[in-house]
Length: 384
Ligand SMILES: *[C@@H]1O[C@H](CO)[C@@H](O)[C@H](O)[C@H]1NC(C)=O
Image (cartoon, rainbow, N blue to C red; front, side):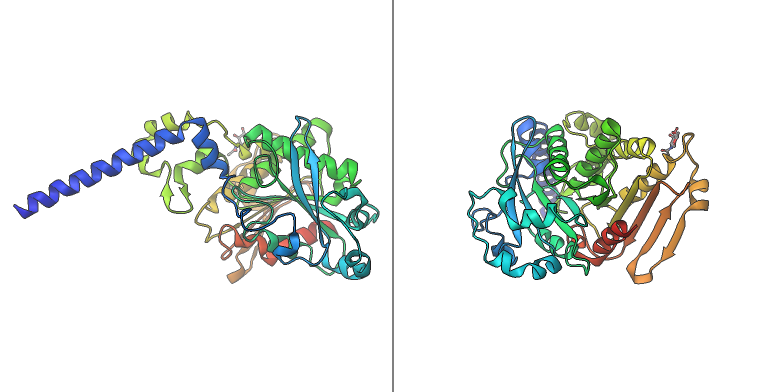
């Protein structure tokens, strides 16, 4: 008797879970919920932090200058320019005594002069992942790590996409790509940094933005950057969602793994597809001297490092007009075993197009952005 009741309870419990899951997935099919689930742009800490006061996040006085970038479709993006520490020290009095208010145009600041008037300035344009603002979580540590190197030339420009933080608008794929392009345009046209002095760095969702922006510039105007660094990239959103769990906890489509047709049915409702694999293929094909670095940690539980693995093969394959077999790629790629530090592989078929992949063992999904494997890669790119 007791046994049949518990079986019955188990049955109802499972039925309730199933119903909840179906409700959850159906809600995600609506445009509004999907936008919030994919971009999570309304989850931030603006209520108790003032992003406009970067000193609250551990920066020195006036080390960071907030600025605004307008997009061709009328959005205003909020961004930060971070002065490298060595350059800050060399210009300390000037920066400390500078009097700025939120109304001071960035172009009148000492920081802008340090960036734009020095022909040696190098610029990392940082595209962050979903959720939060330029100042969220490990992001501020990541900027410090990038700009802390001995050469005093590596500046960082970090931008909040439309709908994020203090930027206007609401996010979607085309909008975020427009924002990325507008940010690069600002760097080239207003700050006068030529593309061979620019590295695009993206993490997670930001890798999809960085890849799309790089592809746009090479396709539309044959503009190539010093390098593109993609941290914790994914091949495309539908493929990611098949295995993805929100915050590593709530599975999206993996419970439907036994029902591929049902998975495909739900994926049909996906509005933004973020097809990085084809954008990277296109980028490598059209480029003369692409310098692409994929970096991923094995203990990333949000996005598996296998995504970077398949992007690496897609990119290497695209270096040859007729394509390459796995065997051909394996035969020419260089591999360095770094033991606990993971491994480094690079593909440099004709000496011009360089594609590298670094799989580290530790760093997770977010914290890796603050690790020296990233700062080292960026510094190497600028030294080449
Ligand atoms: C490799 O490139 C060739 C030629 O562009 C293409 O037909 C093929 O599908 C590619 N293979 C993979 C695994 O991407």
